[in-house]
Amino acid sequence: MHRIAVQDETSHRLPKRKARSSLRLAVPCVAALACVGAAGQFVGGEPKHDETKSGAIVSTDTNAQPFVPTAAVNVRQALPIAETAPRYRLDDPDALDQAKIEPARINPATGQREDRLSQGKFDAADAPYLSLTVTEGSTPPVSLFVTIARRAADGQGLAVVRSGERGLIATKFGPLETLEATLSGPVTRICTGFSNAGQSGLIPLTPRIDGWLCAPLSQPPEPRAIVCALDKLVLNGQASAGLEAAYRVFEERRVEGCAPRVAAVPNREAAGETGSISKRRIRHNEAKLRRSDQARP
Image (cartoon, rainbow, N blue to C red; front, side):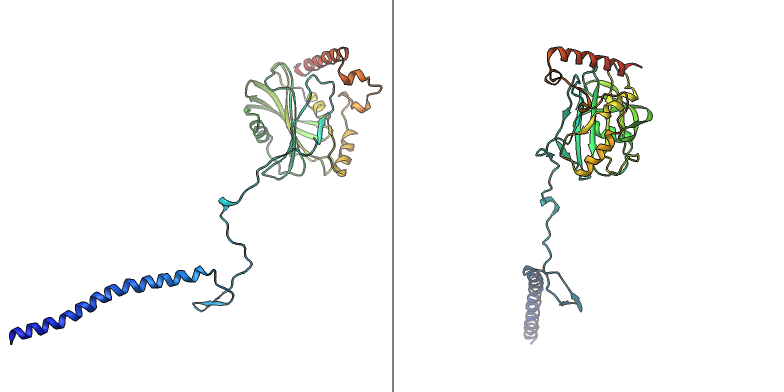
């Protein structure tokens, strides 16, 4: 009897163990099915209009654009405006070194057009060097030191190693702030930077002008040399009617003592334009005299 009772007790325990094992297998299966069901709700897309979830009405826009990661968006790089002719030039046909006009470009930070001109070579320490940037449109004022440092590093690989006295000059474009700066690159030169960013222009369409002028023989340029250099900046075409009207005002404010406009020079000989030997020698001698005047302390 005792043996039979043990067998009966054992027979009652076996079904309970089997039930527990089945329950252990069933719980993970139910969880897996719940995850699959939840994932299936998103396979068909986002919830539609007036779809109820947890007692709240979820409203979505069926015309919404799909999300695109920023890393996959193609951002257009700033490119030179090569298809247009130069808008500015230096009215200085008698210069020993003709001006170099770079293709206009769009500043990627501001979206504004910038035209760059230069005359001379920075590494030619015995000759003047001029760098000009003309920006159309209003820009927030930036310190002149920061402007010179950015322009010098951008494309030219120069660095401002020292700054000196500040000043203010009157030009045909209005007042410009100046700052003596020592630029270092292939050579080290003492230059004077200038900008009208923080000044009130003569008219609303006054462009922003900044740059620097380096005199020969390691001397800072005279303020008048900067005024006369800016006096030569004129339109070359590709300008709006408003900008042309603005430059007519600027041309009426040319500084006395600087070189006159080429169109205003009477009876200009053709030899002077074609560059004959006799005229070229005269122009070179005049250019050397101007260099000596600029370098004179």
